Structure formats: C-alpha cells, structure tokens
Image: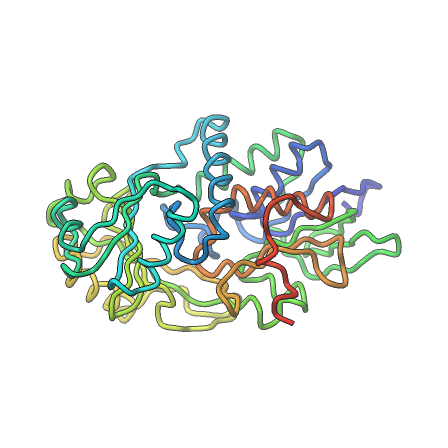
Length: 380
C-alpha cells in the first residue's frame, strides 16, 4: 500500500481459519479491509488444515462456550448456502470417558444447562450401536446428534472469497515483519513486500501471534501435533452415516477422531500429542514413526477394525493458553488491535463466530457476544 495514499479501515494479519472469517465479516459491513497471509490460502503449515475438523454442541470444556457454538452453527449454515461449498457435515458426536471423567461429565452438564438434546450411553451401548467402536463397556458417553465435522480448507476459501466479493484485498505469500501505532491512533504494518496503514488491526496469525504482540508472550504457546489416517478393515463402519465424530478420554490420554472423508482412511489425533512446545518457524514438520505409533497403539485397542495400513500422516500446531481457553480481546496498550489466540486445539469449530467477534472488536471496540472468560486480564 505504500505506493498509494490509501488507508484501510482494518488490516487483518493471518488469513487462516479465524482471519479469513474476520476479513469476511468486516468487508461485508462495508469496511475497507486488507488481509495479509504469509503462506498460501489455504495452507498446511499452521492449525487450520487436515481435511476435517470436529464441531460439537456438547461442550465439556465449559458451558460458557455454548452460546458461541450455537451462533457458529448458524454462521456455518449461512456460509454453506452462500458459498455453495459443502463445509458442515453432521454425523453425530460421542464424548466419552470413565463415569467420573470430565469429558463425559462436562459434556452432559453443558447439554443439560442449555437444554441441548442428548443421549447418555454406556460404552457397551456405543459399541453395539456404532460398529467399529470398542470402548470399555463401563465407560459413559454423551451422544449428540448435531455433532459432526467441518472441512477447514473449504471454509477458509469460502470466507476469503466472501471477503473479496465484498471488496477486501487479500494478499498471500507476504510476511508481516513488524507493526506500530501511528500518531493518530491507527496502525502501520511492515511486510516483506510493502507497508500498510489502517485505523485498526486484527491479529489472527495462529502460532505466530506471540511474535507480533508482547502481551501474548507465554500465553499463546505453539505445540506440535500429529494426525494419522488408517485404512479400516470394514470401511462401511467408518463412513459418515455410520460413524459419529468422537472425543474420548482413556488412560492413554484424550483422543479425537472422524469418519472417512475425502481422502482414504479413518482419521485420529491425540490432544497434546507428545507435549512438544515449538517455535513455529523452526520445528520438525515431518511426521515420524513415533508419531504414528502413539496413534496406532490407541487405534488397535479402541477401534481395532480401523487399524489397517497407514494411508497418511500429517503434522499441525495447537496454540495453547495457560488455561486452554481462548484469548479474545483487544491489546491492553493498543485498543485498536483485536486479537484471537490460544485456541488450544478446540477453536476451529468456532471460526465463523470468532470472525464475527474479532470484527466487532476491531470495528467497535466491543462485542455483544459473551467473551468475558476469554479476556486477557484473567491472566494478571
């Protein structure tokens, strides 16, 4: 932008899951927006890729997420319709663990508090209803019929195209080097290609956020994750119509998984895979045999029919906050800068509404969405 006199209303740094949604919401409000992405749109170097991402209404993490997930569903449905892309898939969801496990108890509590219809099943009942599962028979599960998965790459493309259709500039392969407040209270952003000025800014750079805001140092910590796709012995048992997405806590850890979709194999991952905190600019992005063995050992025990040949392995990143709840706020010393960070491995399902929240914060400095528990000052 330095070659022109244009000043944007909002600069969005990062055009992945959250940033693409924020850019779309801002542009659709008639604001002049530039989105800046260091990689391709979409790309597989951060947190918003991997073919499928879980969405669920039963939310063990905290009942306060429920109003946001309800709005997220509405916005995903609108994006599905307006884009013509098949982004939201309902398969049902299973949240399971031992009877006193927080995954089961918290999911049940959130459903009851917000009158979300659900069924309580034993592990044995899950196994009987959904062949392919082999949960411990005495485990307890919340089955919720609206759960399912999103297709993250399609979601990002749909949001980016919506932003462009509403007049936003979206620029890929351009890295932000630094930014500063301007004398009139706006922001100036320096990239490896150009310089931009705007009245406000959204930081949605995922694992790189902490490098762009001192206030996030130690509060938005990247972690290396791994994913696997294994070929099922009986593929029909792992199709979307027969296999709910799942979030299961067992002695080996907490794992999550999906039916087969778009690429060969039953997909799964483990939360906090090997507990590896990383620098997003310098870590091992290649999956290893050790990564595969963690996921295969679990699959052989709890989904043995799905433990066939490896179809694919991939890595991605979580960005964890200390309490594993989101960070949604404006920066303490820079109220014109809205930030979405620390999504801790469970944020993508909310991307549609987080984009709306970040647009509110950047454009108005406040939002009507209930985000008090996600404010930065909780860490003081």
